Image 1: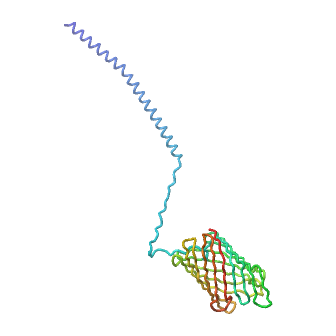
Image 2: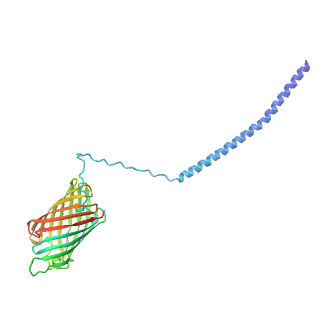
Image 3: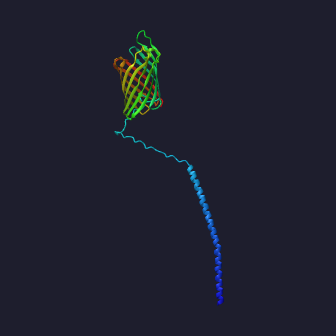
Length: 318
């Protein structure tokens, strides 16, 4: 019995010793695996940080797209809306404040008491620096056919006219134009010009009344300041109210008619007054080409010319 007890005790000790050795052998393996796991995790974190840093750097180099702004459309006033503004008539080049670069050529006939004056042609050049500033030069080529016996007819260059136009839109309902003008006594013969340097400033105002219709008034002061002393001085004022009426079928084709009345007061000759009427009519053929004709008749007061007619075309650079 004692022998069996000793054998059992020895078996128990041997078994316990074997399990302890196995545990010690497995322990370093677990520590090694744990160390390898830590190294692998550390490497993964380092790679992740490197990739993240590279992504951030490359993202910073990418151009930032600019925001696209789309303005809201302006609402169109409904028909009959009292807040709607009257639209100015489509441009045909006849408004005194409509600055468009152009070349204009016209024939001009005037019936004076002393003879007939023919402009063959009168050449006009306008250059618009902007919608607010423009330059104009008129070069007349004239022929005077005298009615007076013994006085010969003359042909040649008339007085060159230069002017600047300054336009200011005060509001949508009122536009102002200021036009300082100087006439030069360049006529090649006495019958073809005034023989005087003249300053003729003009102030004009335009008010749109309805689509295709506007009312304008032009006030021009004329005074000579130098030139041939044997020629009559110039000192007068002109007041010209007019309507600008367009019958255009859109911006490119159609007719227009601008009736106007002119009152001239001659301060140099006892305030003599002349009243005459004209109608500036024309047809817009294309975007660039306009033909026109302007008959003028004497209505009352001192007669300067019993009849005047102008007709020609203008080419608009637009």
